[in-house]
Length: 295
Image 1 (tube, rainbow, N blue to C red):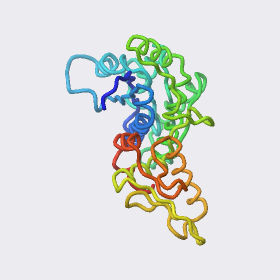
Image 2: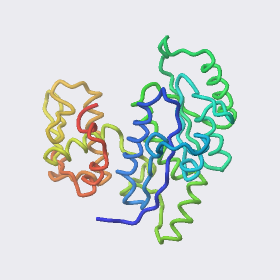
Image 3: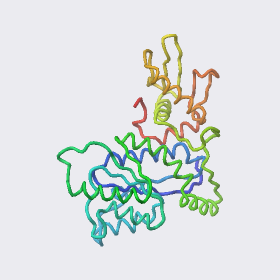
Image 4: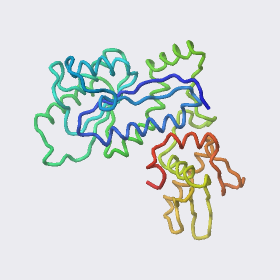
């Protein structure tokens, strides 16, 4: 069913050495939309020069990106690993120029640096020096986060996006002005009331269980035996007999999380048989296909 929503653009700024991370950012945004978009009447749109530009010989390349994409973005997510990128004539790199322009406009920047080891054949002393200088500059400007893998970056963003949407003054002002104009009220509470944590997002485990159930038979089953607990969703098994206690705790927590959010319905009344709700199917449809199974 169609619904009105305020669209906010998230610009993904990064050099060419973090291509997998760009995908992680898009997956995290898709996860946010799956959980919050319909209930909050807000949709987040990922934007990047590689997906939102076309060949054209009509000016300085970075200026074209600035004018046509960056100028319209509301939030910028910056990612770095082994390099800063190619100088533009006005900044140490295109990515750094984008970050500086976005900050000058008074818009929020979410910055992440990878701690992953750099292969010997990728080490460039000049790039590492510029990266260290930029990192020191960023440290003086505010907070940044580090990560070790693209998967960890995705998980971090799933936690950070709800906070940014709720607490950043620029985002709040955009939502209030657009919401007042369109008659849409945005509160950024959860999809259903969760008193303990109104800003929480669904965990990776929860999203994988939901996707597997939705593309399967629409059910999640939790069977408890003397020898252990089995958790299955659709045609996928997430915790089998003999699974360690940590895995069982994670997966049963994921099922409980989905149930509390209204994405699953406990049909047995005993926490044993769950079915995907209409809201759950809508959330699952917005998730990438590779979520349909254990991590």
